[in-house]
Length: 351
Ligand code: GLV
Ligand code: MG
Figure 1 (cartoon, rainbow, N blue to C red):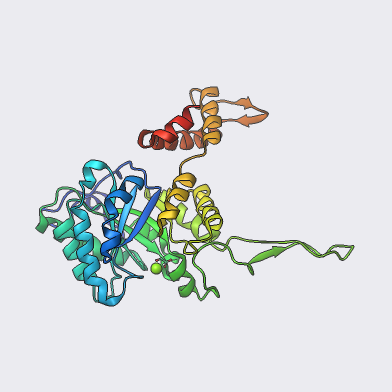
Figure 2 (cartoon, rainbow, N blue to C red; figure 1 turned 90 degrees about the vertical axis):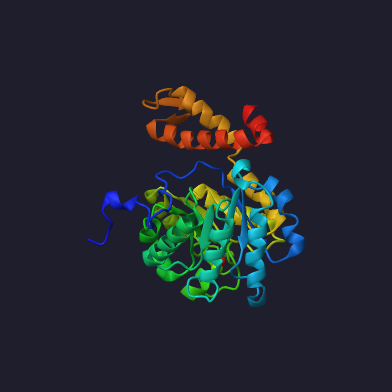
């Protein structure tokens, strides 16, 4: 009996903490724009950037130098006061330092106490098992009670160790505070001892080659996807738990084509969004994680052809049934959500 009793699962973990959410808020989270919050020049751009993004995340962990950790923390607290994130419906997240770092305790304490009203999600790096989530869950509940918060702050785990992947289902199910999981291909590659030096995307040496040809002509080969297994497994764990799967970083900022392909593979496999590390990746994420207008048009025809969602119909020579109706519904529901936020996409979907 290692699971909590169902009735206990949704009880607050500290007296005075808000009730855990039964359902996640329905929100577009196509891109999580990372902000190095210690840099004044970049922080000043946050209000403008926020208008183009679904989620802004203040980063405190890797990529922030040790001597700038406190400045980054103060920067996120300042960002929380820059706009009314809750009223505007733009997500404000923070990636804190990992649990065994010297900064974790103060990161979480100060963020919840000083920015808790605006903060939606704490991203927790290097989560290895449900025990990590249980610890943060209880700790955040105590802080929420102390801060008098009425809305719970959610948790997002980064999947970036071999142990975390081996336990991804347990992590996804660890708490009603879980909002989602992101793939962290850089740390995960290191943890697995993959022989790579890049972050996300394909690899020129990871390929499948065709059989030898009788005419001895050069054999064709094609790059394969190093991340397919992990993303698919993460998607299943998240969907089982009713939380959201995300792709993580793609760091070859100059290679927009490869970035788009990596994002698209994640989208097609079920991810709802991705990290964006540079403003140039925001438009790529928006394009990829908003369903394609042609697909939406076809999906709407499927729904119209089978109005009650049961039975069979032929459309352009393709058989449609209850299962394709459900696929079409996923696309149409997402298109409605995107259209409600984005007038340009609403116009494209109306054509
Ligand atoms: C992200 O944190 C990664 O390690 O890829
Ligand atoms: Mg990492």
